[in-house]
Image (cartoon, rainbow, N blue to C red):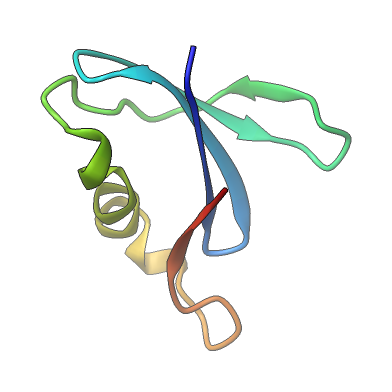
Length: 72
């Protein structure tokens, strides 16, 4: 299953699956992941994930973490 990793204003988020079947997880410092407390709409395309996370968590932005970035 494909994994998409993002730095969401300092928090590591992993989204797995494909359009129509997304699952989101928070990644801990020890590498363990837990189910995230937000839902990724099934209608989103892979190319829209970064913008969606930015829109959803924009209040967490700071001068040191100003953007959501994809980690490959």
